[in-house]
Image (cartoon, rainbow, N blue to C red; front, side, top):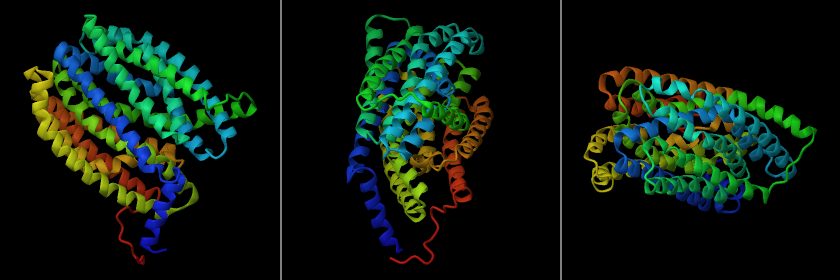
Length: 445
């Protein structure tokens, strides 16, 4: 098959797999949703920074980082199995209902036990981070932890069923509600230590709405097959949950290590830069969530040339887009701090922000494809990849933070983006046999 024919087939497959031309529409919905997520996350930092200062912002982001990391332990990777198997069996509604029933039962038990363990561990956090506030802030976020674990499973089901508009809505709603709850806390004059309640309130609201929506399209099934699928979710999840845990720890390791090695104020100022850059990275995840079902189909059907063409074109197009977005963000960042945050101490975060953007831009083309090993049914190898990335993150932060503090954390994060992209390229070549930028030997238009 010639290259032109492959490209035409690729475009046709995208239209067919995602509903006759809905791919662009679905991505648009997810871009809007994750843009709201990024904007809302930025608004959280701006409002907390403006009304509470760097110290309380540092405590909030330390606790939120712990929350994001620990939530992976609470969910035990069940949502990875849900995404993979519901996407695979989406033409069979009865089977997908059994798959989701089993996942929800398993997640219910895991979330309850692990949230209780999290409460028991609260007392060690103050001495660990040399703080008087972190333990109480952690307790305030625990109701949200339980709800978040259940929400991950329900969201994975929507993604697997390719109900991308609903997925995008609930994805964006979480952070919009966080902002609204924060405004309420500010208006009530709440102390900074209670700010994590905004997370618990938002997750509880999303859980109620998301569960109600899911029940409109889902019929629980309790049978021997349900028990068999619980075992399958546990097997798949235990192989893959470490990858999610390590991925989330990797994304927050700079903030956590700054908290261990520096002050709450330093963490607050740095997190303004790190989380703003993370907001830009959300654009890649909007594409990833829509591409994942296509990757599953191509991999399961052996359409290797179409898969390679999708990877090649996606990497190039998204890299160009993110380069433009990064330049614009770097230019407006100082004005954004002066006008919206108002505290001049946060201007110290501009240089770390630019350093992080460099690495993010260089690696951005590969971010939409960073779950390809899971979609290929290789969760254990995906976990090994995440372990390598986490080890690199710890080494870089441990080496650079003691020497350069905020700039050290920024340099470590920037280098990590590039390293993760290189690791993925290596995995694509050695594990899946895909050379993304290999010249088309023997291929003619």
